[in-house]
Image (cartoon, rainbow, N blue to C red):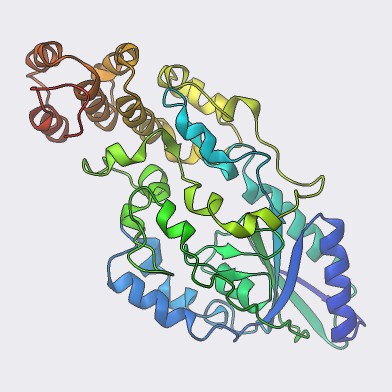
Length: 391
């Protein structure tokens, strides 16, 4: 938190904030009153009560604070919401047609956006506080997707866009490709008008979801979302959903990329995040060979690093199982002796999809002494009458 005393009127303070945000390369900005989203809390509680949050235990744990900004900071009066365009220079779905390569969500192909945006917000705050406030003390706090703040409803209230049927923010100018950041302050600043919903009858995002994660428009069941399954889920991906994951090894962009509003989204300015070349279309074979040190080195400063090698290899091995490429079986087989049961179990499933039945049966017999119950269950549940079919 920063404190300061200054001399700007609320209107001038708002203009100054916007000018600082533009200097930092933000593409969208608006101000919402702290009490602008009274409907968001009850909707969140209902969503959690349905169990749609899956294993994301921090959602119920922080629900009370998340329901309203004042529950987290009683003195907050206004929130500056900022958007940074990360629109890709190509359709990320094109890679889905190359099953021997892994698809990493667009936002995770470069450096961690949390650190980039947090630095920008801190610089804005450090320049704003000394000059702001017609009288008395000014306080600000900055947030980038790590605190119990409901950024998307606040961004809608601030006029940046609206929450589309895929539950993500949609902008008429930037489509579905905006990183969000927030600067909360105890200053009462002139708010912007909330954006209205422009989805109309379109359901392109809903129809694009490979796993049917949207039980209804504007509702998502995280337990079926590939982003949840490949990032948040700590255990094995449910067997019935594995074939639907395809070659998505970290996140999923399908519903975002399908949004028709993307055609109006101009590429961001020079501040736009750039993808690392090695993360644009990596081969599953090279990724399967990463030991822990190599994994950490390759994904240094990347969001991917947070899930750890075991979960990442689980995703890679599921993609290998979906590839239909028998030559990748050797990459899966090397992991039958991996030290982590999550990796071994995923390797079993991949091999059950790629190997001839007799070869797989021989491997199962050779690993009859598997000590982990879940890995043993993978061996038992895998089909032996045909290769390459979903269990």
